Each structure stands twice: as C-alpha cells, then as structure tokens.
Length: 123
Ligand code: HEM
Image (cartoon, rainbow, N blue to C red):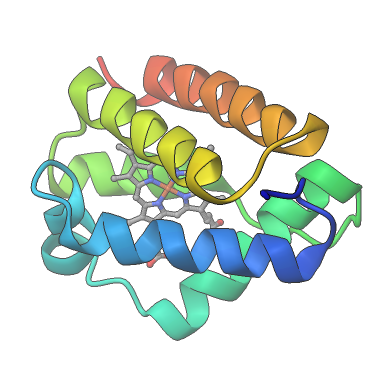
C-alpha cells in the first residue's frame, strides 16, 4: 500500500529517487552531469528544503531557481522538451512511491513551476 507524502523524510526519499533517475536519463541527465557538473552533496539538501517549503510551508528555502536555470540555459540551451521531460519524470517518480493529497499537490506545483520556468528561460 502506498502512503501520502507525510514529512521531510518522505521528501528526502522522493528527491533522492528522482535524481537517481535524472542522472541516468538520456534526455536531461547530461545537463546535470556534464553541463552544470552538479555537486550533489550541496544540491540535494537545497532540493529537500525547496519541496519541504512548498508542501509543508517550512520557510527554509533561500534559493533563486529562475536565475540558476537561466545561467544553465546560457551554458547549454534548455528547450521545451527538456522541461516537459523533467515534469514527466517527476510525476512518474511521485506515482511510483506515493499517493494522496500531498502527492497530487507536489505534482501540480512542479508542473506549474516548470511551465513558468520554461516561459522565463526558453526563448
Ligand atoms: C529542464 C529541466 C531542468 C533542468 C535541466 C534543471 C537543472 C538544474 C540544475 C543543473 C540546477 C543547479 C544545480 C547546482 O546548483 O549545481 C538546478 C537547480 C534547481 N532546480 Fe532545476 N532543472 C530543471 C527543472 C526544474 C524544475 C521544473 C524545478 C521546479 C519545479 C526545478 C527546481 C530547481 C531548484 C529549486 C534548484 C535550486 C536553485 C538554487 O540553488 O537556488 N528545476 N536545476
């Protein structure tokens, strides 16, 4: 039986699972591993805070995602395909492990942010 996303531990689990898939993904993996050369020990806790704040209003995220993604786009062009694919992977990862109100919310929020980001970043 799947549960809903209940707390930060569940977010940590989800985010870790998502980036394991992302790293190996043929469509967007290279942007993380070859273009941005992501420092995962730094990036993952930022992502835990980001989603913890969105789902549970913890107020502990202090990043600037729009600027980060615009910088990434300057290094290697981001396309609508990349954003759509990111969103698809996020939704399937959520569905693989969780179900419920918060699980739905985290998918809807990701989709909305992804569209917004795409409009700000992709020309
Ligand atoms: C084409 C799709 C995407 C790609 C390739 C991508 C890639 C990246 C990379 C490389 C970073 C920087 C990591 C670092 O600092 O080293 C980053 C940061 C981040 N991304 Fe994405 N991303 C994508 C879409 C999204 C979406 C749709 C969201 C939100 C729903 C998101 C949320 C974030 C956040 C919150 C950060 C941290 C920003 C900060 O440190 O201030 N990303 N992303």
